[in-house]
Length: 108
Image (cartoon, rainbow, N blue to C red; front, side, top):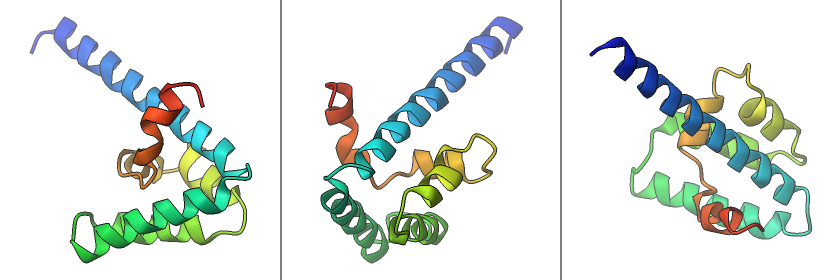
């Protein structure tokens, strides 16, 4: 792999990571709205599906369950949105909020 290919791949990865962070920032805003309970219910359904069908590592199930059971968005902010969180990127890549992707792209 030449240096230009490597640099382009790195740029694309950084853009993907930024898009994931932006998406989850929008999710956090929605979790602070009147839609909180609806969104938590749907995300918890996704996690149950992951668990029953063994679609996802127990690592992601355990961490997302902890985030969703929190009474506020503080845990979401510290575990998911904090750029210094060692868990953030993996959790964002394995999100139970994927059902919101098209909605947030359309400006909701």
